[in-house]
Image (cartoon, rainbow, N blue to C red; front, side):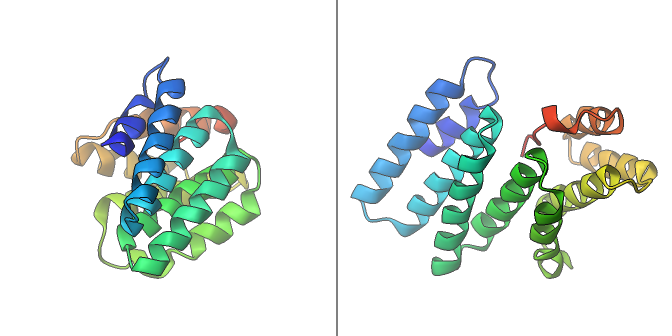
Length: 174
């Protein structure tokens, strides 16, 4: 419950402090209950709060903890989200090579399943390519249209900002 609250509050203008508290409470509860899945997902919620707060080093550490826990128990969805979030934090902190490497590690996972995660992965890979000087504007627009097909609109603004050269101010909303 606190984990969900944390991940929802992070998108509100004044919600970061409350989100941080809810994520910490989620981890405390999960640890007390000795619930491995909840522990990993609580790390993931904390990482999201840190990424949206601009604390990318802390976010990367927490995404790594979430990913480690997910691998330990076989939680594929959590692992994918941890890898995607970590790649975005690396990207936003300017470590394009590491972001690209993290995204390449996911190549095999997106051959068929996980349509939403696949879109996030594809958007992240194209963002790295754009920042590295490749002309991928058309492909970015295709991804925006694919998101629209799922009823998700935030990638349009993200891509507009990215193409305008504003990558540092634009964490992905996933």
